[in-house]
Length: 313
Image (cartoon, rainbow, N blue to C red; front, side, top):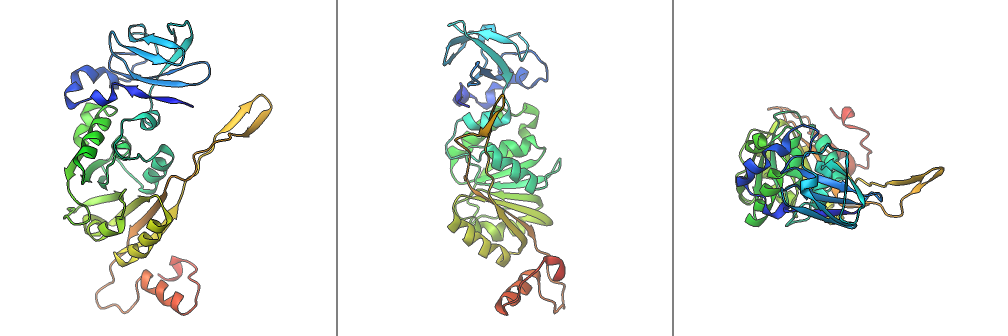
């Protein structure tokens, strides 16, 4: 489905709280400041921020925002060409596909997997580096996390903050902070429950991340190509991580019409690799037993097959 970029998204600033306050109400009535999706009979979508006196330009004419304000979600309005459009509240997934961006965003199919792999819980303290355009940051905050972002480029930090504040309720803004810094070199702090990296060379940040997260911590890294993935896999055990797994998520819609059912000709295929790892327990003082990683190296060197971590524990 085509989804047009939100109108006015680039103009959202922290000072827009008063104007946008109603956009986070759970009510079923369209209010000024809300982000809506207009859907025509061909299921084409146009996203807009509703403003009194404003309008949205669609494939089939213009829709006046004054005609939207006060109507119920799910109801229809007519465009200037008398074509019907149904109005819905925009979801986070829809916003991510059309959000203003500086860096490439992580798409919903990967975001969902990352959130689940991190085993998030309400109030989890998350360290994020490489905030990009804020898609992951917004998803983490919406899932109940307290997020500290580390970003090298100021323009990316600005875009990420604006995007998050355009879709997250003002009372949640304090749960997200960005500090300018270099995750490869800076002290990343401590006391985090989870960490997530979307960096070109995440292996360079592993030592700092390992110090920053707790003994029960979980790390997720997002990389786009196989050479990055191989480098990361070699570095994780050396930096104190274990139970390393990598996957990619493929998403394919189906066309269904009556008794016709077939895969869509296009699909969202490879976008990146998601690598998840757990903090490796430290060896007990005075113990001669090898760690899981050491046992794996020994087994491989001797031509043995490591069947599972439970056999090494």
